[in-house]
Structures are given as structure tokens and as C-alpha cells.
Image 1 (cartoon, rainbow, N blue to C red):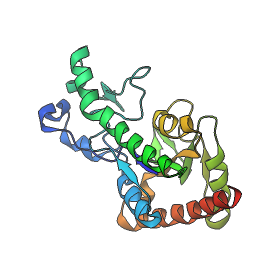
Image 2 (spheres, rainbow, N blue to C red):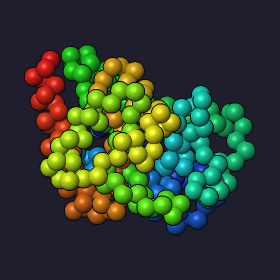
Image 3 (cartoon, rainbow, N blue to C red):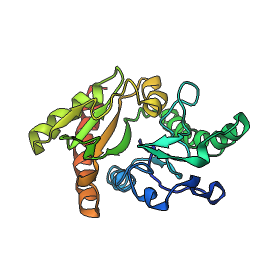
Length: 232
């Protein structure tokens, strides 16, 4: 089961572009570049269900806890989001009801359907990260985020390093202890093998890179699924 929280840069017309320069919509603050395409190719390769968010993370971020965190940012990488400033409780609730809760409801519907059929899916969150942040180069081609349950990371790390020689990030470039709402809710809470997979954006900026990484992930995940079935 593939979940892509930051698949889209779409801002609904009624939000008037959130008061930002439209050029920002083509950058990492609006979406995870390349993640949607890799998610679709990977879902096709594995014949797996996928849920992709349909609005920008600037509208609402599905990977932020709506109770303990703020899914509606007022600033992103130094860019003020004027359309998100000063929202009262009613406006905040409307935003969550329109975009946040339906995304997670779709994830839960697929999860329930699979579990009802006796399937315990591997849950993959597909994200991407910038090669440089705050002047610091990020050397990992791929990173894994997890929060306590590191089974999928450990199952995939070896093949990624041994077959392709990748520098694999362990809770890099972020920590799953801080940014893991979607995986906690739809994976770890059900005792399922799960991780957020982060791909470096320069490696998946075009179709060739997107297809290559989907093929790599599909190959490794097939091995993990075969091992799971054997040990079941």
C-alpha cells in the first residue's frame, strides 16, 4: 500500500493562491518533486493500491497531526503563506474537513478492505527531499524514516547498499520520531511493516529517474514480500 502525502502542488481556486508567487508552486515547498510519479509507477509495478494527496502541502499537510501539530502552515522555507494566516477555528475546521480528513479516510478505506481480505499490507510512504537544505549537502540517494518499528528499513537497506551501492539514510534527512503521522496512523498503529521512503529529488526529477527508482523499489519490495510469505 503506497501513500503519497505531498503528491500535488494544486491550490484550489477559492484559496486565491494563498497569497504567494505562483513560481513557488514548482518548488519543494509546494510538493515532493517526483514523488507522485514514482508512486504511480511503483503501484503499477507491484499491482498495489496507492493514495495520492490531491492538494498542495501548503493547503494542508496530511503528514502533520491535526491535534498536536499544525497541518496548515503559515510559513514554508521562509515563504509567508498569507492565505493561511489568522484562520479562525471554523475556517481551520473547514480546511481539514475538505482536504485532510478525506485523504486519511481514503487510506483507511483501502486498509480496511485489505485487512478484511486477510491481507496484511506493507505500508510505504513515498516522499522526496532536496539535495541541499540551508547550505548543507545531503549525500543520501535514499533515506528511511521510522518511529520505533524499523523492520522495513532493515529489510530494504541491505539490498539497496549491496546491489546498487547506495548511501542509505537511517532516519535521514528527517527523523520519523518527529514527522511520521501518516505512517503511525495507517501502518504502525496496525502492527504493519512500514516506513517513509525519501528519495533525493535530483534523482527523480525526470521520467527516466522516476521509472528507474520505481523499478529499484519494486525489486526490493518483491523480495521483502516473498520473505514475509515464507515466514508467515
